[in-house]
Image 1 (cartoon, one colour):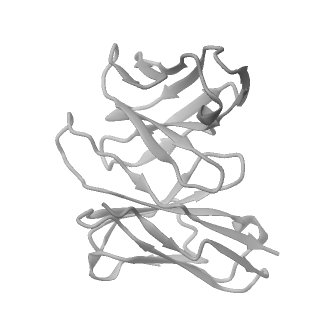
Image 2: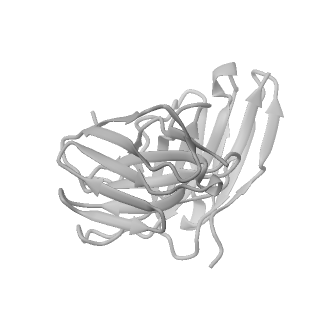
Length: 110
Length: 118
């Protein structure tokens, strides 16, 4: 059974203070690793998909990287509007099913 | 492009009552998913449809949960009878399926229905 573990559970940063969120996974086969952002009272919003070790994707202050066992979401010089829960998920190649981690709740303090 | 629509947004019921949720996916998306998200956890897949056929319902508690997707578009998820532990957000997602391993196969989520069972 696929397993996804995210750390830390919660992270508080000062505005402008860069950091990284971790997603480690154990899967029988990986079609893709997905990062989503979820704001309170809303559904997850797609950020990135990574398919192979060494791949990197960037969007504004966010950069996602992938190795064979884990993925990192790096946030550079964050702003208060980056506050949200960040979810990581792995996709089963057989049926496109997503298995999610429990998320990292990120708070950026002005 | 319109997103995934869900209704109602909130629902409060007493245990042993029944409840139904509705989802309208993004136009053209053949694959539809229902997820359950308990507070503080990530979404957990309940059921996956490809058009109007079930692909995976291994995590659906079939003694009380049922889902259908008539005509391969809208879908409803029903709980009967509800238990206290069913309190959660029920998320619907849709995607355009592709077997191309290099292609994006992104699931787009609706805002969800927050269910409270008292």
